[in-house]
Image (cartoon, rainbow, N blue to C red; front, side):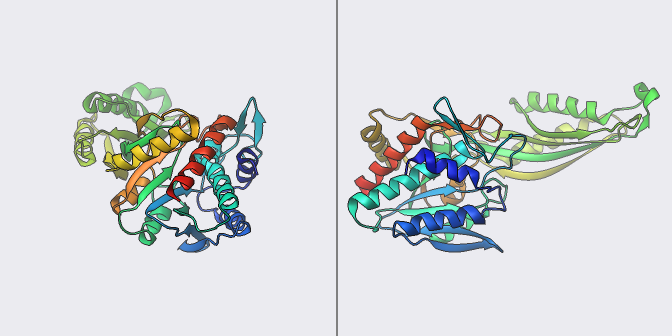
Amino acid sequence: MKSSELLKKLISIKSPSGMERQIQEFIERFFAKIGIKLERQEVERDRFNLFFKGKGDVLISCHVDTVPPAGMKGAYRPVERDGRIYGRGASDVKGALASLMVAVETFVKESESTDLPLSLAFVVDEETNSALGSLKMAEVFKGEYRTLVLEPTYGRLCTAQMGALEFTLKVRCPSAHGSEFEKAENPVKVMWEILGTLERELSRKVNVIMLRGGSKLYAVPKECEALLEVKVLKGEDFRSLEEKIKQVLNTLPSGCSAQYRLEDGENFLDFRSEEFADQLEEIYLKANGERPQRGVMPSWTDAANYHRAGHRCVVFGHGSLIDSHTDRESISILELERMERFFLELLRSLS
């Protein structure tokens, strides 16, 4: 089967976080047909990871969940256009998943053996702050595994991961009749002033993930709530950023108050994986005739949980991260073919 055709099937299976059973059963059946039995690992009621323990110390881990459609029309009806396949999860990360599955199928056929020279993990719950799937999977694969985590990295081999601090702010001020707005502090405007101050004090942009405040009622609102995020750079501790944020909140207009709540915090991570990355670079060169670039993954990934378990991690995958989670999400057939050749060459080299 071509990876492009398999990707269309994977996209058509709805698998937002919490609803991964159907796609896991599909993956389970696919591997069973080629003679590979995947084991289940319960994560929560009606949610399970899948894994295969092969030879050696290399593990490829891929999450199977996606974000919801979030405004993407026909999110689960894949469309092929101008050499690209569009649909929810196309780049994050079902494209890489399809290429991996087809590469394993090809390897089994050409080697006439189901004795794989590496291990596989298909995990749930990556698109949430809890990331329970990889957290549980790290219990199965203990020790110094060399772990390749599949994510859209534009084809770069990422040996580090940017840190992030995600938090909620609530600003409250006394309400007032709408016609007397100039006599009251508007918490929405106060929130925007806080955002500007934070960017100056932290010397970086603030990501406004969600902003909510006000209503059609003709009154100055009494509350504004925002879900915010800032990146944590190499050498920083997100706790020190928290202290700076709290200092800013002490300078609000009279009568207003602010509440801070930590949602998630992760420091910048170096994955101790240069030798593994060097090996993958040579394999990619042999498979595709060019060397992949190196980089830092801008987003949190399951590699964080494997890193804490002692693994040497690299994050890799073709596809556009900036377009993932949007109504533009897609991946090119050329990128699928490059990944398929890379995974197949990895299997061959390890055997």
